[in-house]
Image (cartoon, rainbow, N blue to C red; front, top):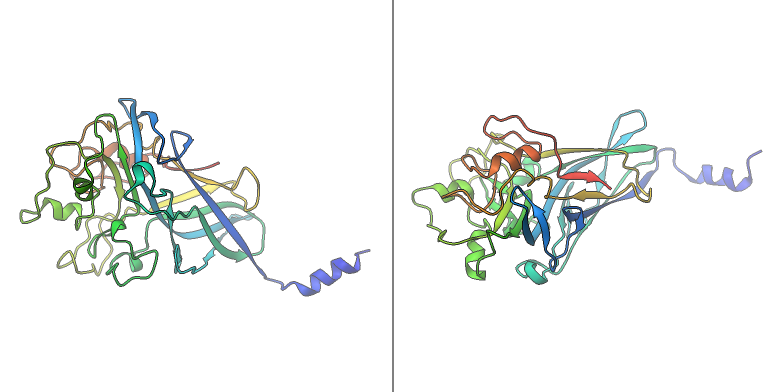
Length: 309
C-alpha cells in the first residue's frame, strides 16, 4: 500500500516535468588539473615542458542520451554572462601567473534543463553554431562579445583557444604576445599580401586555435551565406555520463593527448604559432587528426580531447 506522502508527490508532480542539470567541466594538462602557476612536463614528441597562458572553449548543442538510446535536447539557461541561446563559454584561466592577459572570472559548469527521465550519456558540440558564428562581436551579448575569442565575421569565433609557452617556444613579451595570440582578423588574412606583417623573428609560444575555415564571403567583415568548407565543429559523445552521479559526471578537456604526435618546440616557417586550423600549416595534421577532424583531405583520427572522468 502506497503511503499518503508518495501519492501526494505523484499528484503534485507534472507528468513531464523538467529537471535541472549541471554539467561540470575540468581542464587538465597531461592528466593534471590546470593551473596558471604550474608547469607540465612530457608534452608532445619532444617531451616539452609547457605553461598555459589561456584556455577557453565554446560548447553548444547539448543532448542527453536516454535509456533507449534516444537524444533529448538540453535547454541551456540564458544567464547573461556565460550562456546564450544554446551556446556556452567555458573559461578555465583565472588571469593569474602565465594567464595574466586573461580574465579573473572563470566558468566550468554548463547549466540547463531536460525532461525528467533516465539518462546514461551526453552529447555536445565544441564550437559555435553557424547561425551565431558570423557577426559583429562588439554588438553581440555575452559570451559572444569577446574579441579575444573572435577571428572575423567571415571566419567567426575561435571554438578552442589554448595558448602555451613551451621549452622551445616561450611566450613573447606582452606587446608581441597580443599579435601572437591570433587576434588578427584570421589566419587567411595573415597570409594576404596586403595584411599587416607580423614580427616572427623570435619564439611566439605555441597555440591551438580551432574555428571554421574556408568560409566564402565578399570580405573579412561580411558574413558567409553558406556553410564553411571546413566547419570544424567537434561532435562529442560520452557514454556513461549521468547527472548527479559522483565520479561519473565530469567532462575533462585535456590537450596533452591532442599534442602527443606534435612537436610543440618548433613552429612551421611563415605560419601562425602552433596550429590555428587554417590550410597549409605543417603543425596542424597531427593536432587536427587527434581532435577527430579531417584536415586537407586526411582522414580524422579518434577524438581524444574530451573524456569522461
